[in-house]
Image (cartoon, rainbow, N blue to C red; front, side):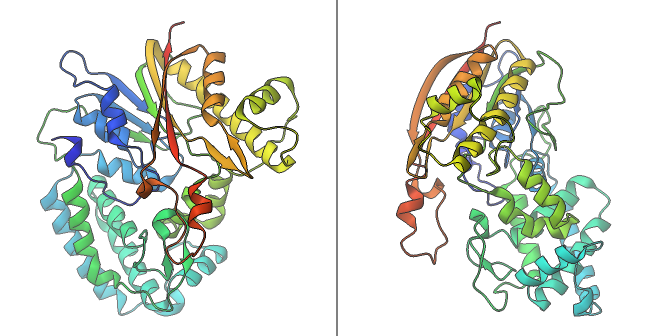
Length: 403
């Protein structure tokens, strides 16, 4: 198997290019490396590292990202999954008939979550999704159950037509355009499940080390000092993508409440939440200046950037701690334009890396393909140029721990 043949199993915005990981990871012909992505997203680093024979470990705070990563880099039994998908649809069709509209919500959903679901899903879709969400947990095998939930999510997280009333959910920019869902969930589920299984690259037939994915925070990693050989990650691009804005549309059906997801969303690295400390303090102020900001920028922007710097300071601290001596850390970053100011996020990471004992070995800039930029909804006229200016290139920074 080559990564050139591997395609994503689920839509995910601003996915890291596998070529970046491949260029840093030779095949494990001598000694398998332990490779960590502390902000794993959909799992590109993990899948690529495992395909090369390395031990892959990932963390993320987004529950949907953790689910997608586990499925994509896990061993999938195609026959078992196909049989289970068929059984789920059979059970869901039977239950669907008896689910009244007033009860067509996930079990345990509170009033806020119900209101959210009612806004984005019509009555028929709600009844069908309720039936599917009831049937999926009946499967006792966790790996198969994860595949089924991944297929369930793919019915919702789409660019144009899905089982919700929204368009462009896959770019995390959902906007309501339909009065009735264009896709029938019960009719489509088996087909989507088959698609997910087909795209999963590992079936357990090889002796490749298993990957592990945890729902943990990159600012507080659960790993021993010096236990990681290589870190490859792409932190959230500041002010570019609000992942949970779209992901919550499928997560609510898996038992997550809107209020709890809001808490996760506001606490994530890169969240547009202001820093509570002293922005004009010497360490933060120096890094903000190096990033390109000045006192001419709004207080809101400076506090948002200070929050990002503070978060990434913790990420770099943890990265350095878990790296083995002479280990490498590769950060794929996005410099961006905010409020008309060009913000050099990569400069902040370089300074923070130096602070924690990571020497910058190399820096490479690569243009972002148009299909990987954070684009506006398809129906938005005139917004493309403005949003396109936010993110035009990636910066790949390679550090080494020498201390």
